[in-house]
Amino acid sequence: MALERAGFRGRYHFLQGALNPMEGVGPEQLRIRELMSRISDESVPELILCTNPNIGGEATAMYLARQLQPLGIKVTRIASGLPVGVIWNMPTS
Image (tube, rainbow, N blue to C red; front, top):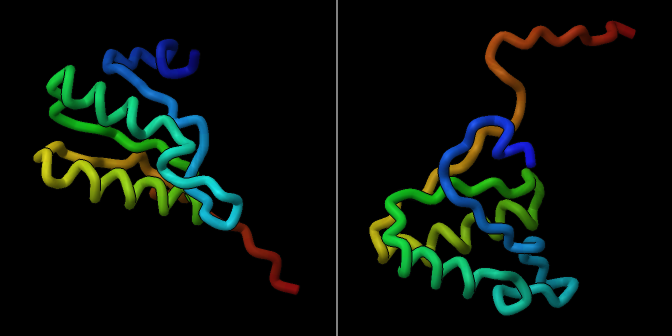
């Protein structure tokens, strides 16, 4: 797995999707309940969210951050977008 090859030493949890009310996917259809259980059982100090940078991923990340806020867990997200120093070559015509 890419996380392990990169030397990541934490634990990870796959939600198996993203929130999408238009398709009938709510928190109950994802593995959020299992995540919350693991967090409370394992005394997790920080959660790094790795969701897609689309509307479903953003909604899922926001939902999780709000659920975890009362627990005092630090919630961060991996970066997305262009790295600093990228030079764009835009066509002029």
